[in-house]
Length: 232
Image (cartoon, rainbow, N blue to C red):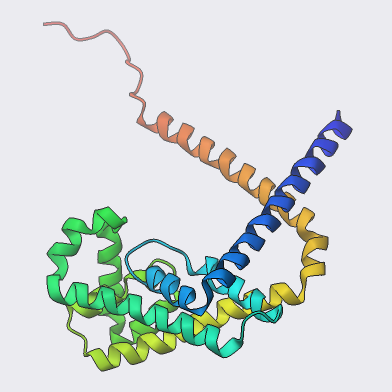
C-alpha cells in the first residue's frame, strides 16, 4: 500500500512539475511577444485598480534577459514607466472624484472599503514617503495612490516617490527572474521536493481550516437545555 501511494505521488508530482514548467514558458513567450510596450501596458494595469500581479510580468522578463532576448535597461524602464502611469491613473481618479466615488464604485474592481480605509490609515500615519514604501507592500502597492490623490499630495513629489519605489520593486522582480534562468538545472533538480512540500502544506492548511470551522460551529451551537421549562 505504501509503495502504491509513493508511485501515485511521484506521478502527480511529475505532472505538476511539467505543467508548472509549461506555464512559466507560456508567460515568458507572452512577455516576449508583447515586447517592451507590452510590459509598459501590463505594469500600468497592475498599478491601477485592476487586480493583476506584477509577479506575472517582471520575472519572465528577467528570465528573457538571461536568455539574451531582452535587455536590462529597457525592461526596468518599461516596468517603471508602466507602474507610474497606473499610479497616476489612480491619483487623478481620486483627486477628481474623491473618496465617495471610490467607495461607491470600487466594488466593481474588488476595492473593498476596508482596504481603502487601511491604506488611508497607512498614508496618514507615515506621510508622503508611503508612496515610496507602499510600492513594496502587497495590496497597499496598488492602492497607495488613492489617499495621495484624495489628500492632494503635490504631483511632483508623488511622481518622485512613486518612480523610485516602483523602480526598486521592478528591479527586485526582474533579478528574481534572471536568477531563475541562472539556476535552471538546480530548480529542476529540486522541483519534485518543492512540489511535495507545497502539497503537504496545502493539505495541512485544509485540515486546520476544517478544524477551525468545526470549532466555530461548536461555539455557536446553543447550550443544552437543563431542567424542565418554566410553565405559567
